[in-house]
Image (cartoon, rainbow, N blue to C red; front, side, top):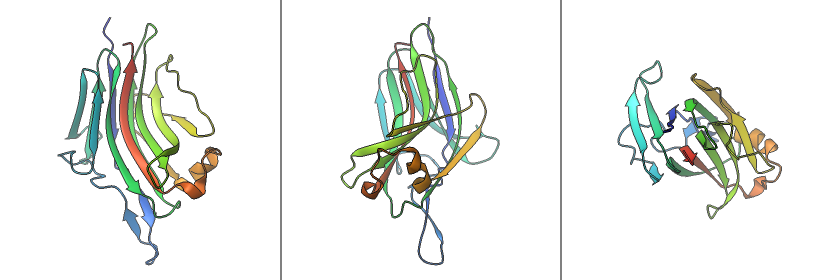
Length: 191
């Protein structure tokens, strides 16, 4: 039986940091609006077959661009990745997304957005996962991995302040966080 995994996401990831000049907001992402081509600012990573990554308008009831990631049968993933310098832990993250994930018969699937907290060399110290996952997905939270489950099938916005979010990750040394990795992803195993 073929299973399909899909993630639709509006990544108006407003990754904003306040600058000292009159508390103006600075957009940290390059092409955070996901306009085509996605090669502007984003690295594409694909493993396995039946993976699709498309930038388009009108998935969400507005006129911004969204990205649709899909993964069909088999094991693998599709990712859009960007790493940015983090000038302050007082950065705000806002992500709107819609996830539809299905898997069955011992297979598992997940889709969503990882916000990775990186050291100066780009090593992962911890991460926040805004995801929808199937029942057999083996991922569990820890002191360096905070999972925020997303309601399936409805557009929703998740927003947080990086400094406050790090309170949910006591295993992450906040003084070592220098960069953020943003990973929009869809992943499946044994589908």
